[in-house]
Length: 161
Image (cartoon, rainbow, N blue to C red; front, top):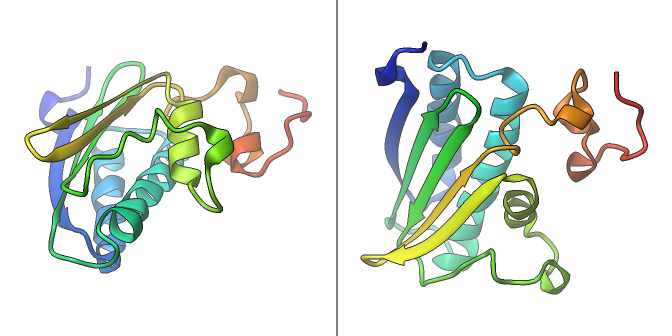
């Protein structure tokens, strides 16, 4: 069983695009310590970056010093991501995919690929919790890379190994 200290990591970042690189380094450090497979880490990074850019661009309307909290927890069957920001309340899971504008990839990925997801607005924070299939190897695509999945631009008719 992995060391519990390495199973959970939290960090706070400022809502600035310049924080994307440190945020990715934080994620990569977590994945390395918790022995999360590389393809799972890449999937998680895409979702995390999209959520963060949405917070900066749409929630705060640009770079600012507002905090964004990220907590990652490795579980035996998945990784759980808790993402919190202080942008105005916004539940991405209640908006229909058909109404999404250009962009919105992070929200779409979170909605469609996470086995479990929830949203709450608590104490002035939006809180998204995601876990499951988005971060696990998807059985129908076992033996392939995440880019083979249709949500990542791959073909849906590709035979599995």
